[in-house]
Image (cartoon, rainbow, N blue to C red; front, side):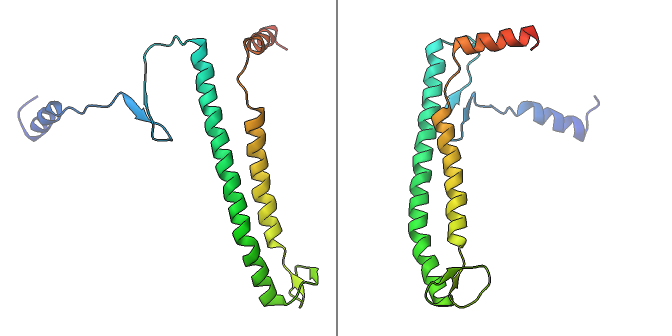
Length: 145
């Protein structure tokens, strides 16, 4: 390549070396080194699963605490707003007549509670696959059923 501005730029670019770390940050900001060996000890797989399961249980407990605290804060706020807007409770309604209270707090509680229930079911039913289950699935796939 003849000397010129492009060759000078390439020369400088070749001299600059960027070192890339061999570790990466996970979602929880823990460092994980990337190993090159693919052989794992069976106990390590269960240990990894157990660690993930414990993290899911902790996350579920945190979400349940947030739900309880959120409902403790939202319910009196909802009651105060409805009392000021409509007076004493007479009936549930969706048309702004005096005495009709909007049940939006129930929608919040049901949707939020439903999401927590799904998370709880996932935590409860999540388990590692056993060798027998893996063997049955391999046989099923091989037989073409």
